[in-house]
Length: 76
Image (cartoon, rainbow, N blue to C red):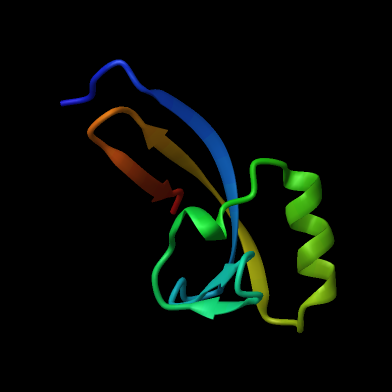
């Protein structure tokens, strides 16, 4: 059950199989998606994607956050 939080659209740079996610803070790929992997602007995400090797894609998702829950869901 969701509370009175907010839900924001986000973009994530990931492998095609969604097994690795680009972490902005460490500038490397991690196995788990976290808040450090989120772009809140598709333009910024596209710019970073252009700097990476081929084979990575952008996935749109949602970041829901309230006092008790912090959930990131990627679209299929």
